[in-house]
Image 1 (cartoon, rainbow, N blue to C red):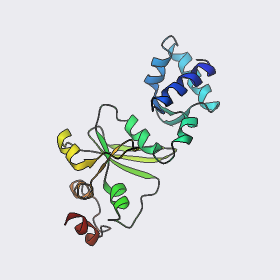
Image 2 (cartoon, rainbow, N blue to C red):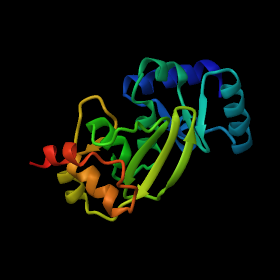
Image 3 (tube, one colour):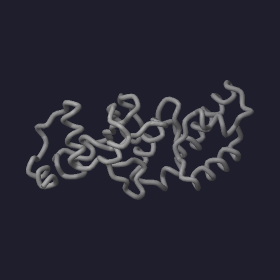
Image 4 (spheres, one colour):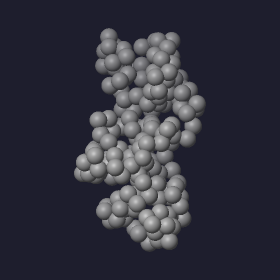
Length: 182
């Protein structure tokens, strides 16, 4: 993998809205590269600042990321659960809606049909909580917001998710929540 080839391919991907890549995606961009050579190339490209490793097997184009301020952690969260429905919920959305007074610092709480777990990234931690809800149910309970990579839970859905997963309800401002539900 040559630097100029990678730069050209990253620019093309950014034009298509892609800034987060799994290693397997990079391997598809350079199909003739042997596995050991790919590993060395990735290390070199990270050292040179052309790629940023954000988690095991996932990379970000740092130049493109600097132009996409605000939603990079959601871009990464979406890319890390391909083929699964994921949406921002729980404390992250309740804080955005003003239902809880605490603001989750450096943590994005995401419901997903994929695997649960916490992933640490340079952009903050992503906490995935598995849901077995059906796709139609998820679509009914969430909203698409132009410019955001992930759908977001409606206020009442974020609260119900919090209850359903057994999280701390003491921080919920029930007056603010009830205002949304009435």
